[in-house]
Amino acid sequence: MHSLTLFIPGLLTPARDLTEQDIPPVPALEKLLACASREQLIPFGFSDALCMLFKLESHAEKDFPIAAITKLVDDDQSLAGAWMRADPVHLVADQQGLVLMDESTFSLDQHDALVLAADVKDILAERGMILEAPTTNRWYVTMDVAPEIKTIPVHEVAGRDIHYYMPSGKDQQAWAQLLNEIQMTLHGSQVNTERERRGERAVNSLWFWGCGELPILVKCPWSRVFTDEEIAKGFSLLANIPGAELPESIDDTIELSEDEDDVLIVMSFGLRHSQYHDLKGWQDFITYLEEFWFADIVDCIKSKEIEELTLLTEYQQFTISKSSLYQFWRRPKPVSVYAN
Image 1 (spheres, helix red, strand yellow):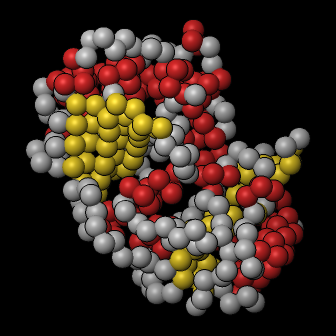
Image 2: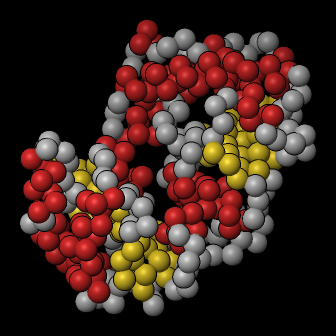
């Protein structure tokens, strides 16, 4: 392939909290990082990064319209107007405050999702919003006019105190009141009572984010997208380019790609280890990446099956070509060096 951009949020950050002895051996990744040209990036969130990768124009006072983009994947009917994600979440009180736990930390079947959505539907309807729950973990509200607020994507709030991430802007007080009403209603839901009795986490709040109308992409730099995540899938539909599920390995990726492709791979499933400080999970994740991706990527670059690799995290960009790998004077360093 002509180029491969591999976006892996959470790839390096957990290494900050481990000693060198506790980081699994990853010689191929260490070689790639050592030989790469390295660029420090202004820290950005997961969904914001995807919007930038697809060249979507940003506006300081407005959300990226993630809701409309993911609804293309979940239900592409009736996309007119403004859409906002209203994701079911669990809030837990601890010494940090009210910490948000997203859908990766609990299961929600269709019955519970539909009943809980019905519990809060009227509260939203009173404010001119129609609630839809096409999947158990991604809910949406639609409205004629987008509210004058700026929201924070759920990925940036997961594992953190929501106090610092509430909607801001002209309408922020009204949205704080709405959130409070929803939380009180869900607290009294029979479904949540039964979930807690079964030892499951209650869905005791919604997280609103990603408001806007379905955008138009002026230019897309990718000819093919592989991903395990809905935002990137939505972008591939919006850009009308081939999109597919995340392959098992780099070898499978090459088999599914053409020689001249500029391929984007978005691998999101390791992000939760960083969000929730799951160090054991991250150790397993990086071991998997080394075995099924990085070790073979080194060989693919040497053989020019991949002409150029860009490895992207939330904070850094690493660019590697065949000539990079022969810069023998660049000695591999522990991955923890790059996590800072």
